[in-house]
Image 1 (tube, rainbow, N blue to C red):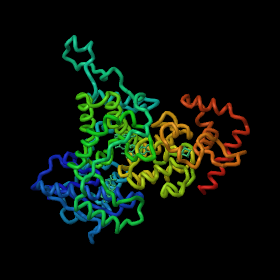
Image 2 (cartoon, rainbow, N blue to C red):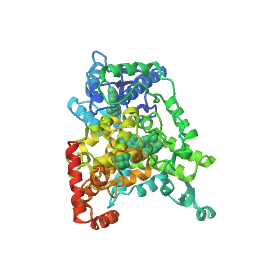
Image 3 (cartoon, rainbow, N blue to C red):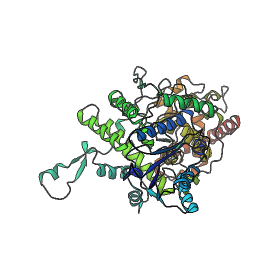
Image 4 (spheres, rainbow, N blue to C red):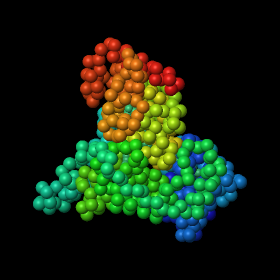
Length: 528
Ligand code: FAD
Ligand code: DLZ
Ligand code: SF4
């Protein structure tokens, strides 16, 4: 053997950098299902099935195309249980000249391979993951000399680099020059977010998600997961995720044909009876290599050019993929490993039990999102941000507990994307690296963007339980004010919180005391 290429479970693509210059006569691939990876987070059952089934099918595809692949199954007798254990086994057996790897997406796994290299004195070539548009170096340049790392500025840079939704400025096209023409955003504006925030009326019914037949491999993995992970969170019998490139493309086409048109306007909307809305449901496919991010963004641009969706809709979608996704990844690698220690508000409470069992809460918004998460391993961005995330922030939950939950329960969760979204965007534990203010809100926002409050035990119009016979004030209300009161020193100078603090100033001492008492009683009652 000349080179041994280690392909990880989220690198399932022929275009992965580690496979470039692969020689089918001389080189071999290692893929390994290992216990350590199934246990480092409390994975949803669907997530384990998804990754292991996709790995097994990618292995078959490689073999059918003449690649030599060594593959370890989770229940193989001689499975050493870890990436380094499996690599050492093959390294000792075949003594390859070089071990090649595309940079793991997570810090913990990169460290594992670096430690392996040092301990075993082997040559490990770690290549850039060029599935991302922005390299670590480019991101470091973006960060340089900046006080705030606004997504918007980063996004403009990536729009210019990819030339997506860009056109030559009219000034430029008149006088032909040899230098690169100046590009302007199509439609004259970079960002159409303001057009994208409608609620979803009851008579709008999002189309059903494409249903494909599960392959025999997926069925076999479902059986194995049921046997080995019976107590993991989540439902598994209705598994309906793509596990090959072909299937993932069919799912993406289904989105383009049937949901894209309405994606933009209903992007932030939440409804008790709607699990997926008009979202694309492709994050998990992009994250493990079944779809390519840039290709997806370009396809949506094509749809706009064909006239099948509005500019605001296409731009909104493209911004998520080439803007947010790249930005979040940049933040992760730039600020790790310190990032995982950040706890700006020093929150220390434990995660309430109802994050694992929706029947343990009467808050209909949380009940609904936890139920959808348990059933699907999915909830959309605003649900993650403004329901489970917002509550975790206001309830002063320790960021490690929140991270562990998000890293486990979503099929698309890998630390590089989960952590900056959770610790940064949702709970502001990074003190403002990702978000310019905490995304905290009272029940008012939830009531505006969903129908959750209509069927709730709690009253969204009530702020506190003090001096009231019926103690059913919406917990989001008093927890919101309690959060602002407690963190006044840290937050009052944030210009974006000027109005909330101005409103707080208008509250009487009695009101403030009632807020604090209601919050304390709530924490005592749910034992956190
Ligand atoms: P759509 O709404 O259809 O958006 C299209 C695509 O844009 C997504 O598929 C995704 O690739 C990308 N995208 C959108 N927003 C983001 C974002 N903020 N960061 C990165 N990519 C984005 N996304 C993950 O992939 N894995 C996670 O573990 C994850 N954890 C999150 C935790 C919290 C607290 C929050 C607030 C967001 C998290 N996100 C995560 C981002 C986002 O919620 C999901 O990418 C999105 O909900 C996936 O659903 P979709 O494919 O239907 O996305
Ligand atoms: C999430 C996951 C799981 C559950 N199992 C495996 C596995 O057995 N083998 C594997 O290669 N990858 C798995 N993964 C995905 C890895 O955790 C992911 O590739 C790394 O976290 C990337 O840094
Ligand atoms: Fe959630 Fe409060 Fe609305 Fe109930 S009333 S659904 S707890 S926001």
